[in-house]
Amino acid sequence: MYLSTQEELAAFCERAAASKVLAVDTEFLREKTFFPKLCLVQVAAGEDIAAIDPILIEDLSPLAALFEDPSITKVFHACSQDLEVLLDGMGVECAPVFDTQLAAAFLGLRQQVSYASLVESYCGVRLPKAESLTDWSRRPLDPEQLSYAEDDVRYLPGIYDRMVSELVGRDRLSWVTPEMERLCDFSRIRRDPREAYLRLRRASSLTRRQLAVAREVCAWRERVAAERDIPRKWVISDEVVVEVCKRAPSSVERLRRIRGIDQMAERDALSLVDAVARGVACPAEECPKMTRHARPSAETEGVIDLMYAVLRLVSEKSGVATQLIATRDDLLDFLLDRGSSRLAHDWRWELAGSTLDRLLAGEVGLTVKNGSIELL
Image (cartoon, rainbow, N blue to C red; front, side, top):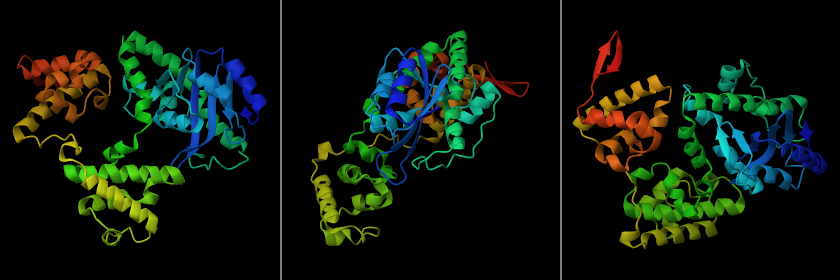
């Protein structure tokens, strides 16, 4: 059902409040804005499936109360963007959450399995793709668009029930729960502008002093983009940010020598030069430092290759996706400082870390039997 009035939403939320599980998805646009524009919220509660129109309904507080109810599990597929959109669009910190994409990686499916593949695998249904590029901000929405949107939550409750049963049957629910809780860490979703430089492409090419400049420039870009609600790259692109950090221009004249700055308004150019100056003036001990490993030696690379082979074997036997257990960087961390590595804790230690520890101690090895790798 399509809900476009306050009365319809209130009636639906009153019924949905009795549910222990809600399946949730969102449709949004962000190509031309800094903040995602929430265009549609789909919710499945028992037999009810609702497409809720946040553009036409001004007061979404009944829905917000459901999303923040700690007694109701909200089921998403690949929830990270949805959680950000609901936070920005409704001011909602949605919890607790169950992410079927994350759970699938513990149950023998690839780590980033698509929703369509999951529905086909669990329900035997092939979903249409015709509306995947819809402009969800345009009104009215036609029946085909609404049906497509509702399909995004239609199958989630059944998939959730099956997944929980499988996780319990494999004694893995305790592995998944803390991973789900980390998804709801809204301190990561509410990003500090002064940490924006950590997501700057090619930041690894910068020195510590240049990173101090990047911290100020990226924070300036975040504030400008947020104030004008435009994409960051419309203010200044990552490529130009890196060049600005390397040259550290001390005047607008020097700044404009950098390609890509020529169209910038004078007031923006002045405030950007001020941001550069703040970075240049940062005390040496306060300059940020990127955590990066020195390039491993050939011998170390060989050990990591051996560890990765063991990791692949553990993944194949357990059905837990390799990248979910550990990356090659995680393996290097484990090799260099076992205690601080995430492989030394919780389910990762139980599943793979203990075996890797024995491998490095020379207590286990690898062999080939019938064309397959096995542990000795």
